[in-house]
Image (cartoon, rainbow, N blue to C red; front, side, top):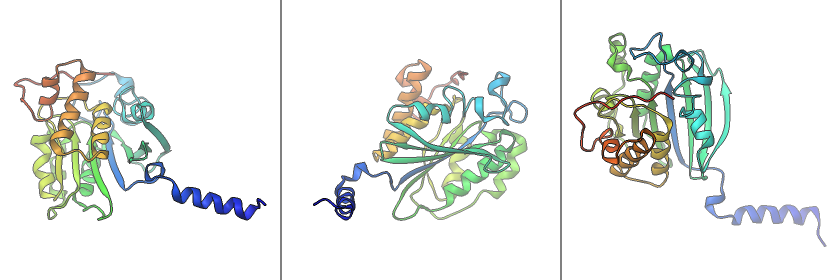
Length: 259
């Protein structure tokens, strides 16, 4: 005889016997800080006004545009958007969470463009915080390299210092190896993907790195994946794409695409 109690018991047993890959939770997580591009406050070559308003994530080049983090991860193969919340604070204009094949979760925050200093400081503080022993964690910064701007130099004095640990860090911004790597090493983290030229910090690079991280790729593999993705979407050779992230360095910067 089938009773409500037997149905409940069967449900519990079924969930308990499900393979690990079917679970909705994971201990592999990436936290992404996206500094929205902002024509008014950042030292950049201006982009079209619609995608260059750092107060409006909806159409911002690095968030709501076709290759922005929110739009791209929402549509990429194998990814699903878990939810978004607006107006986290005056600085964080939107937060979205994503999952990739139940192997990885990503939390992405869209920072107001004029607060790129706070975005960089928060990134460095997260990089300096050792990961939970039970988790695999990565922290990523996406946006303009604000350390190239004179007005942001004072923020460096507030960057944290820490003994070495295993948290991996990624900086998708122009010339980030030169401007960020030393600070990340001083913060104790491991900078696994940085850049060696000017580049477009678009979300297909993040997506490739995230999949590699989920599959426990090493540093060389992560850099290679980033370069291959960059080459594909920028329509350049694989050699040129990989050079952006540390192999076969080019003597001249690559052009920035706008989408």
